[in-house]
Amino acid sequence: MAKKAILPVFVPHLGCPCRCVFCNQRAIAGQAAPVTADEVRRLAEGARRDGLRTPELAFYGGSFTAVAESLQEALLAAAQGCVRDGLASGIRLSTRPDCIDARVCARLRRYGVGTVELGAQSMDDGVLRQAGRGHTAQDTVQAAALLRAHGFSVVLQLMAGLPGDTREAGRETARRAAALRPDGVRIYPVAVLPGTVLYDMWRAGTYTPLTVAQAASRCADMLETFTEAGIAVLRVGLNPTEELGAEVVAGAYHPAMGELAWNEAYYRRMAALLAPYRGQRGDAVFSVPAGDVSKAVGQKRGNLARLGREFPGVRVRVRGEDGLAVMGMAFTASGG
Image (cartoon, rainbow, N blue to C red; front, side, top):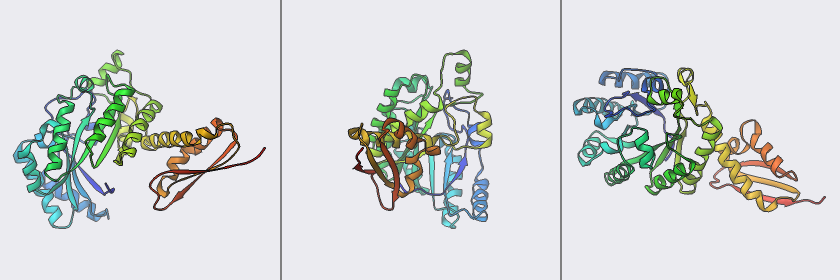
């Protein structure tokens, strides 16, 4: 799925039938009140004035298809008008897997919605229960199939580090999610925010969040599965803002979480390719897609330093190549 300009339109907590243990949309969205239909157009007009290339309007922060139908239609009609007038390139929205049926799909198609993002969070029913999600993994399977049958692009939103989650459960979630063949995924390691059940659990010592390093490793596990399946990973980690950074009290929040996870995934792939040459001396040149050089090199060249310690006789270089889709390596042995 090609990366698009997205203009988020927040409807915090609207339509949510339960309160998930991790959720504080006011902190994540930076606002408490949902937008009105008039504000949808004002946001799109403001984006035009600010020079943002024509974005998709994206309704985030609640369970959109569980909102009162009259409000859904008012917001969608406003968004559709923005598309018609060239202020937006399309419409996408986020909702719960158990809030999708044929009638909902027909309504969304009528207003020109192109992409539906499903808050799957996990494909482990035990984890979903502990998170207070109120839906099952099978709901996600059924919703994704129904949306695809009605011609929508489907994006799955997943989390790492929920109560009851384990490394193997996260890997299995990625495998089951990949089997649904979504057009893209987003991966969010858990951050602990005030005003949530998870905050109370953390304070009581009944929940231990992932560290940033642990989260990067868990997310790298999932990245490996999705990249091998050819599924686009649209984001890793919450969108960083100063306000959100000030709110997070514990857990896996880092403004460059995505970069850290990709660094770990690339390190593993490079180390695996070098493993047959352990103990040898020589030069290893890794070729990666042109835009991924920083991911392979690592923050502050950390991956190159790690490889140097693990393979002390090997000089490692990384080069980017336009049009390259898969990483490769050339190794040249040297004497001495």
